[in-house]
Image (cartoon, rainbow over all chains, first blue to last red; front, side, top):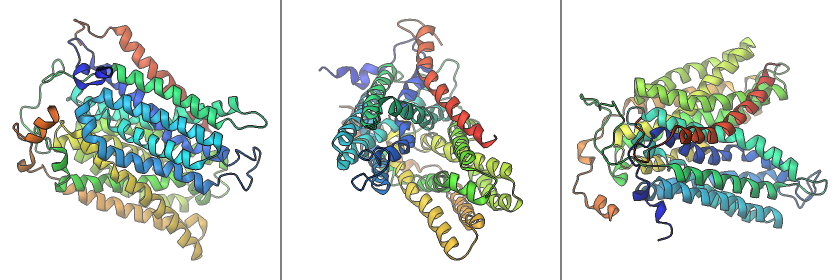
Length: 458
Length: 40
């Protein structure tokens, strides 16, 4: 068959393959799909496609455009959950190839939507097709990386998921530059930019798909000795993907991720406004934009830093760090406002956001410790629904509580205080969920003669 | 790592890292430039 080169069997590494080829392959995927974080750069230009210099009544509204990103994130969660098992059994090359294709088709369909000024085409294109590309692409290299780096699974997955944070750094200035190049006094070059990005991303993701390899069965890195004394929270067994969701451990980790992300995501979305309102006159619009940029850097760096730390201190302890340090810092934030200390405020949020990123990158290794390597990508896919939930919960909490406070006469500079204490409270609940995580009972472990595994291999 | 029987050459490894490293470093530097406005 023409596409047989995508099969898992064709991606098994030959002797002498260097495992350090796999992180760049994963980064090829994650750097592309990380563009999702930068989609907002298109929002304002897309409100002026007809009016060019200003919005006309026929132009799209920002509220209508906001749905594009929301649909994409919803389909990220759904596709990661639904296609997780297919990704695991089909192998990383097939998954990366498909994800790249969906991602690019999403851009191309959206370009047609911009040309014809049909918003529903962008919902279908970037939202649905792109969202599926996001979900499949996000989980595609996870179990492969863990397989290649049994000695440092946190660092390996952290490197890939760091790429997701870094993708926005590339996409944001690149999109602005492309739009500038394609725009004329009578035309805004959004559609052409979508086409160019789609082609660039197809090349990148397919290069990743071409170089990715899975290790041979039983492969271990040179000099690596698996721990002789088994650790209670690191299983040597596998749990079948659909059995994992029946365990309390899955749902406890679901809440751990959801609460950690909720605390970070709400702040990330409001960072610019919050810094200006808490320090009126001290933080300008330009400085606030710089603050957002700084947070993005800590978001990306934290993904690699904390996931690598988790290889040394363990996943559970890493999340304990997030919840304890996060709680203290959230309580401290209102004090920085009272003290008028911008530096302390910035420092608090940089650490908080590094732990927000760290929560994403540490969780695949946490799942591997709990449920084994065999289905970790698929289980991770289902856990990403926690991200979708937090994506709604976080901004709603921050925005509505702020509005409620202001409506009740609280000065703007202090309107975020209650929110910060609520975030600290959420992290305390996260701490409790994390503390309740125990090793998975052996009745959930996959047996060698399990018919479901045999069926998947035929 | 061993490099026998169709193994990875150092050139392939360097090319793979450069392929993802250059755009990533460019993006980080662009963002860092924006972030510096906070301190100016």
